[in-house]
Image (cartoon, rainbow, N blue to C red; front, side, top):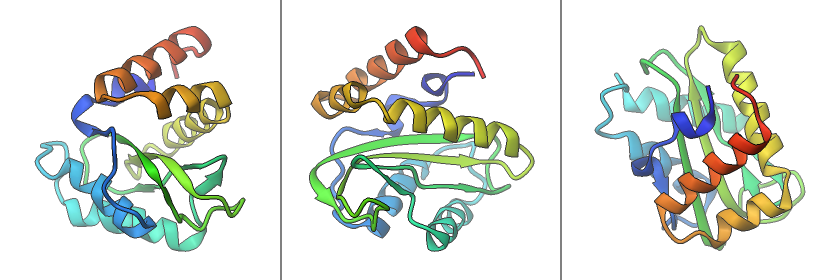
Amino acid sequence: MKLYNLLNEKYIAAELSSENKIDVINEMVDLFRDDNRVTDLEKVRASVLEREKILSTGVGKNFAIPHGKTDAIDEILCAFGKSSKPIDFESLDHQPVYIVFLLVGKENLVSLHIKLLSRISRMMSKDDFRKKLMNAKTSKEIMEIFKNEEDAFFDEL
């Protein structure tokens, strides 16, 4: 399984409209409003917000990876968003966030959830990859960047 297989252009916000952590998380969760894989959108939202209360998922290098686990979904959900405006995500490095990757896993798929979080983190640690994402203008371009990166550097999970 590769991240780009989990992503879909309709779950990519090429320009987030929100400017703070909670609003960004809500904006990204709302991308799944009409998704038939979601049985309870508010439980999805609560799982991500509860996880965020433990420790900020603003991991550094202008990137955040809000995530949660819930049984209110039928399969793993991924969304991606970026912003040209700085977002205060209370990041570990105290820097603003511009790139956000949302991951929502199922309660019984913990191992895969951790592997996906690790893959996202490794990809986002690459300055060149983040720069390409920031320069992308459309959801389609963003999908292509993810596909090219994973095909070149990563095996299936």
